[in-house]
Length: 107
Image (cartoon, rainbow, N blue to C red; front, side):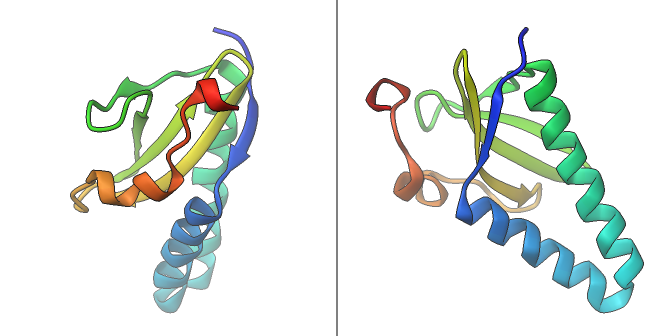
């Protein structure tokens, strides 16, 4: 596995912001720690070239579970693109990803 350049979609950033805001409502310090931790995990995945597990409902979509969340992304030899970060209780469906879907061959 080799390091990959990291890109994060606006939707994934919005997901992370929503998680932070929800946690920070009760404990701002915990919200910041959570955000720092999950961002660190995403950076670690890109640095180590972690490829996650395939998701069959969209070709090329991969997933990696972490802290009751699932990080959804596309990965190729050069780049890891995070599409969404969802709570594991959210039932992921193609509707969450189709607007973001880009075939790696089109890049």
